[in-house]
Image 1 (tube, rainbow over the protein chains, first blue to last red):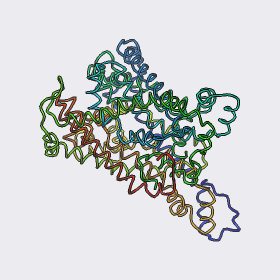
Image 2 (tube, rainbow over the protein chains, first blue to last red):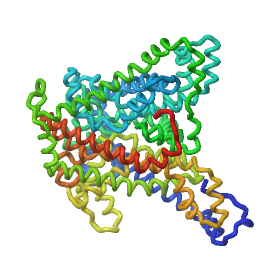
Image 3 (spheres, each protein chain N blue to C red):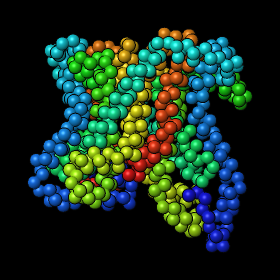
Image 4 (spheres, one colour):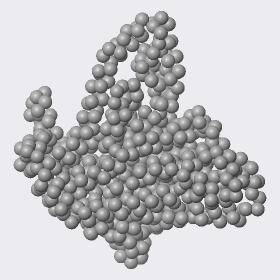
Length: 294
Length: 337
């Protein structure tokens, strides 16, 4: 959109011509320069963590901003051999997978009702879920802790999964409802004529058609669940059921002098989320943009 | 009309969509008429489909909120049912606690500074990256990456880099512009809030840029071209045509940013911890809540703190909806509300 191609002859102001030429000739390098600067700042801390894991502590102390020299692989190796890492990793996978599945399945079912059924109380139901957007999980964490404690689910993974599903539903529903509304009525009418019930239509038509939306909300839910910290901090603490973000903090407490190990643990903890993000980048970005565009 | 109901995001999203406002007219009544006898069946389907979501949502969102209000009237250490009714005493104590007020002050400072710093940067960079340059999609991915990194991981990395003899000071020294740099990024109370803003900007600017770029793609290029034909310079056209049209996107981003800033916890907790953050001036409302619940075992008081935070978030969200998002809503009449 920035490169506006215009016939110079209709250009009334000479100032504009100068402006455009400037943009073509060195405006572009400036753009690149700023873009590179932004990328450098963006990736710097991530690179610091990943590369720091390949150094030893004396390298880090002597040259905090240096590169690995020589490369040290023992930090990553020992983290990958520790049972603590894999224990936390498994917990994180369980929490992220079940949270994602719950949000997607329950969210899709509720969104379908909101999008395609007409009934009294529908506005109320939508308002109920939309109100959840104003109560982020971190504000509700104290009462949630007390509830989970009464349910006897402290230090258990479901004690984290269930609240995360509940708090993930509003966003999912907000994204999915317009998506499902956009499915033309004709498709539903045609399948009804072919003898398909409303539920059959849901399973055979809506689920496949909503796949892109489901993928987007699912990935967002996964990344959020993988990274969540405050609720697990309250519910799981430092026990055996700790997830990776908790593990990073606990590990730091145990190995406070071993910066290189900490950085190796930390970078391995962020790897899965970055991997999912890289694989599905288009989906995530597209989904967020879709949430704005509709 | 549309402001009568909560349904904030649905409406505001429709508002951002602008021209698409008319597309979400209520489903034709014909659907009901088509199946006149299926009403019991429909009710069953609605219950089966929406039931689980409603149950989970009510159990883990609504119930805790209600319980917090109840517990907030007691002095209670969390063992057994609360019995020591103290009325509004907890709330009185909260509003007399200078630690609470400084946390609120910091939280709102973070809200304001995030808007002022990230907003213009995001719009500017989105305009820049929206140009047809090579590698635009790669740049987009890379800029967005910090958003995916967990707050704890980011906090750990920054904590190491920000140490007095850490990477950042060494790098700045290495530039040979400022001489030997040894800024106490974390501990110095004059610097700490700006350090936090630097980390927050790093973490969340990519998200803002992505939203703005999406908004830019909705603006018809013809308007921009018309301004150019009328003699506006490139930046004039951006300033007076593109940016105003980006209004709805900016206002939604601002809403998300405000809510996010108000609940800030992880990054401050990992980089500063609760005591240092109070000294350095970066403690937040959510940290105050943790310190006075999980941290102290005074769950009655902690619940009252949670209620106060609820109240603050709610007031801010509703006020923002009424006074800022209203103009976006007036064009979008959705059936959802």
